Image (cartoon, rainbow, N blue to C red; front, side):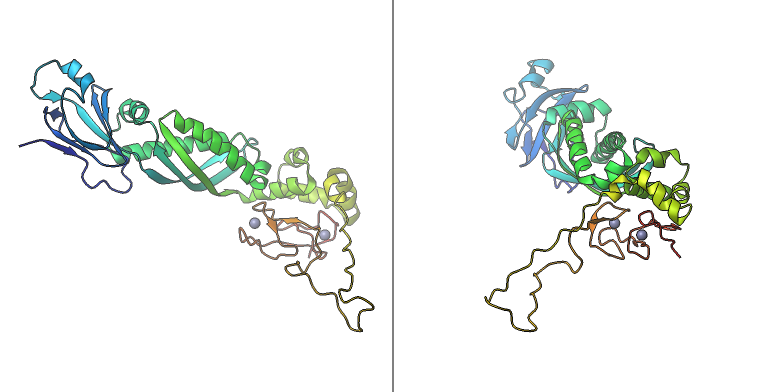
Length: 335
Ligand SMILES: [Zn+2]
Ligand SMILES: [Zn+2]
């Protein structure tokens, strides 16, 4: 009976499969499906690699192994590992610390595939002695996560929450380089969410409001910052002038240019300027940022449409942190 070496019905998430029989006969049929590669190993070393097709194993297509096992036609020992070249999806999630040691949780999805099966087998499969899919998958996930933790920890909490798009792009490039070293191609990475503790969210709020990270970080707690900025109504504004230059320099709302009456002549009595389609109800020019996720929200929103957080406001409509006694912008007392 002819020996048939084939990866039958690979599972959707299976990256590698090892042919269980390590004794190979010359003349055996090797079936390599599309998007697969068969790698012949012995003692942790890679000898021959065969791509998709139906191969009869001969001294011709396994020249390196043949040289090793000698001229005899008797069966020889080798490990056959099939590698899937398809694209895989992995989920990740973990915890790390920012540059200022703020605890951060993150999660998302990534897509990858084997780009260089020889390098992949050398570095991951043989190098780590992982010969089944579950172990390889676990290794890749851990490797990805480790890289994510390391690269994210180089950023400040403000960057993470306010410039997540920029951070994602830069981290992606670094992770892609990491993956390339393992013979893998990291096709894409999506950071779906980042989060931190309530205490750090408040601190982040004050950093964003005052534009002064150092000042906020000098205080032990975010509550202390709030108290410091809101000692009294007058003090709130007085302190604000020192620590909130950004807020005081907010540009005035641009005046809407008067629209000429389209009909010519004097507009009839009761004529009203037609509302511009899609124009916001609130005057333009005022941009509001959600203090929890950093995304731009519609002016006056009570809840962030992106993260769902409730947006707390002072009587004058300024965004204030949860539990604030005074508004950091106008100093008004919050009931
Ligand atoms: Zn939000
Ligand atoms: Zn206010």
